[in-house]
Length: 55
Image (cartoon, rainbow, N blue to C red; front, side, top):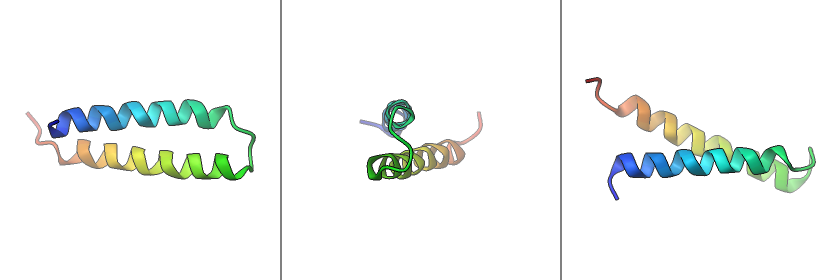
């Protein structure tokens, strides 16, 4: 898998995590953990996008 495929997969997981997190009861451990993991995934996607050379 190349870096573009990995970035797309990470973005897909981030979107799925956001969907799941939005359905959790606020304040539960699962909600907190899901939001933390979502934040990490989105940060990794943003870093990948920032590191891509401009055409």
